[in-house]
Image: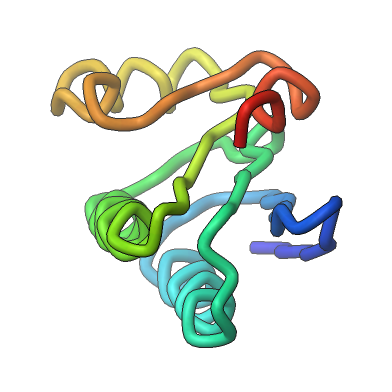
Length: 110
C-alpha cells in the first residue's frame, strides 16, 4: 500500500494506492490517526487506485469519520472503483460516507 498526503487549503488529502488488506489497513490507520491527532479533521481520500478493502480498512474509515465529525470535520471519499463501491453499498456505508467522482467536487463545501 502506498499512501501520500498533502494539504490543500486546510484540507488533508490522502492518495491511496494498492490493496487495503491487513497490512494496508494498518498503514492507513496509522496515517489517518496521526492526522487526527495533529488536529486535521477535514480529510479527503483519493481511492482511485485502491483495488480492494477489507473489514479492518472499513473499520478505520468508520472510526476516522466519527472522530472528524465530532470536531466539525468530515472524511470524504473520491473515485471508488466498482468493486469497492459495491462493498460500501452492501454494508450500508454509502449512507454514511459522501463519495465523489473528483477531488474538486469533494473539496466543495468542506
